[in-house]
Amino acid sequence: MYDYVVVGGGSAGCTVAARLALADAGRVLILEAGGPDRNPLIHIPAGFTKLLSTGLLHHYRTEAQPGLNGKERILPQGNVLGGGSSVNAAIYIRGQRADYDGWAEDGAEGWGYRDVLPYFRRAEDNNRLSDDYHGTGGPLGVSDVGHVNELTRAFVLACQESGIPYTADFNGARQRGVGFNQTTTRNGRRSSAAVAYARPAQKTGKLRIETGCMATRIIFEGDRAAGVEYIQDGKVKTVSCSREVILAGGAIQTPKLLMLSGIGPEEQLRSHGIAIRVKSEGVGQNLQDHLEFPAIRLCTGPYGYFGQDSIGNTIKNGLQYLFFRSGPVMSNVTEACCFINVDDPQAEPNIQMHFVPIVFFDMDREVVKQAGATVNPCVLRPKSRGEVRLRSTNPADAPLIDPRYLSDPDDLRLSVAALRRAREILAARAFLPYVEREEAYPGREVKSDAALAEYVRDRGKTVYHPVGTCRMGKDDGSVVDPELRVRGIRNLRVVDNSVMPRLISGNTNATAIMIGEKASDLVRGVRALQPSPV
Image 1 (tube, rainbow, N blue to C red):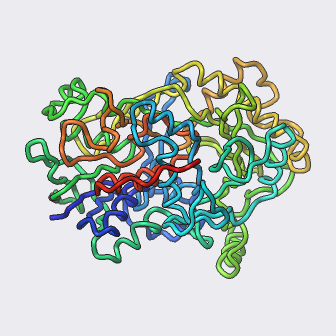
Image 2 (image 1 turned 60 degrees about the vertical axis):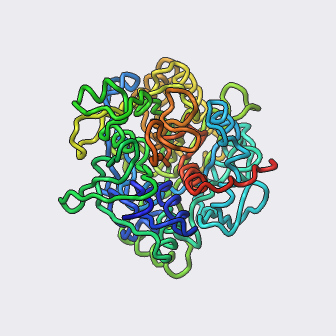
Image 3 (image 1 turned 90 degrees about the vertical axis):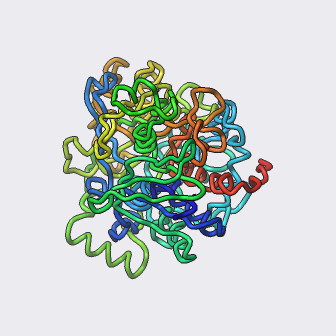
């Protein structure tokens, strides 16, 4: 018997579980489907590039996407303790003030920007910033990138040459501009949610972590969630809890488990012969994700990180990292971003561009064995909405995932405009010493809006940011209320990115940790942190 069972040991799950344990709120159990975070590559900044194709991620496939020329797309998600925070590019981005104020306008009372900023600050231990927007002394290490490549510096200069202002902090008063990312690292090591939160909480004796646990259903006593059934090492097991079951499996797995447990859209449940416990039409709906597409210039020499994984360079770079905490291993590879508005340069950004000093395509695409510079734009607040549905009643089967990328025409319009801007940046003077005269992708022959739109449809890929499938709010279509309680069931909450009413303007890991931080206070029933004055 535990007081709390947390299903999912990702960013939000580790955070809420650890905070409950550290506050001595009761005995807490995390059930994580993936394995432990023992792989040494997890814990070094550049290591994630070697993890993307491994079993440390679920390599989900979407349904065929009409907006992407009828093709399926890979949609990887973390499959290890720490979830995405253990295998992502460690970029620390929170989004814009308007994102969270929009949540509150949508009915997520208590989740406006001034409400959530104190939880971002409570989590943070920033190595450079300490002000109204940033905290120090929190569990989560946040640091400047430890190594910056010459192509990344050229990108930051090229953006400024293209009229984009420089910003030293994407998470402060203004997101707009180009600059170097901060990362979830501390002293040259990844600060995942497992490392930052779960490990210290385990030392209290109040938190237990079980890995390799596939949750199969929620156990109920009347209208109360009383435990979880799961499979571990091929055996069906159950665990009971006296207070709450907390679902933290993310935007793909959380709605799946709810539906397998009889909570979801009536048609979905009946079609699979699942007894309806609570009819909740919003479960699995409102799926949103960022879609990116590359603009690429090939290099005239060995610039960027091409070839750094050769045997000789791996040994040299590894020794430099081991003895001096410097060199390419200190890089998260995605060292810089820019945020712009392609409709009004002075307005809040509607486009994010990630820069990587390599040729970067989706994992199932061709391999280009040459140095290059890649700018990946994405529409920050897509209007397209998809869904997650059950494939079968077998818990081992992945659900049907249909993001419906580019189903809203405005997403395609903005994508084309963003691709044009990315090409302009790569053609700026700062890149001339490094790149070939002719653009590699989309290529000089791709000029018209129609041709660029076709390129976006062909090359579009996920940025690994699915959210929204158990959205919070006050209307009948919301799955959870603003305290993250599942409607119609007692002692059951959702604490992960599936509760977002709308996708935020940037990378989603920092927000997942904030959700876990705020949820820990909601679960304990303590007063929320004082709203921020800014």
